Length: 417
Ligand code: DSN
Image (cartoon, rainbow, N blue to C red; front, side, top):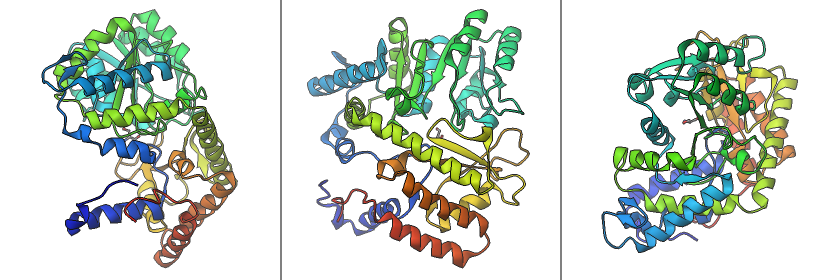
């Protein structure tokens, strides 16, 4: 379907693209933050809008020839507002990090205090980690999960907020398998006069489908990526109350970005349009069923899941006590044709580069059409691989079975074939 004319003339590059397509087709993609966009989204991302500079905003551009870019951006903003019930949308951030940066810049000054979730407990780099711009520019303090339940310690959030009086509280996570109580965060933020920012990047698709509580009524600003459960192109999105719209716009452009990626904005429009269709709810519901089934199968086989399970598209296996590390598990699964990532588990002692956890998500597999019975097969592949991490031959044999299995779920059948 997609036009690859001319590409085959560059055999070196064409080969790389083909091999990546082959990898995506023949392996099982279980990185919780990844997904497969529709061919329509792919077509938008590869469209002629890649040629267009459109610095500024609709009707306020710095270049000529932006009449269709304006139409496109207005459409994308409207779809984003409609899908999430938000007052205002900025669709230009290139990624989740730049969305968070623009959001912080719009209401904070360097040195202000942010209270965010500890990276080691499931938070994100941009929620204050010292290696990120957020940790370098702001005075960042962290809440985490309780040791007994591995659920967010809302008492700790309240106590810390009371003591340190943050200017902003950040809720949202990249490896927290449970539902976040936004009303509680709002209550705490109100008590100390803080802004509440929710980064819903991981669960935005679930929010859109009404299967995860919406943060929109509770937070002044909500940020997200568009490529995780939302199943759009790689990019960012900011939703906010109208009164913050201008400040946010100014920080995205010219604050930190130049020209918006209009081809990616076209992909966002397409994905948001898809998410507004009723079958998107079925898709998200199937993600939850699949993750739940995966959690049951892993737990039945003796693996301990952080917080005991999942309410979302992801789960986290705690490998402590199994003799495995996250890195060993990731490498073994890779040989077995399953792509996942090592991840810190709360209160662990390992370095992040080794980690004691393995994070698994089902959004991408669900996009390929897998349902619970297929997840049973996937669980068996995972369990067998994790039980034989040192047997390279066996892992490779699993990899062959995975390749055969994955052919039952064609991915982009018309692409480069
Ligand atoms: N890298 C993303 C994730 O894997 O969760 C977060 O930005």
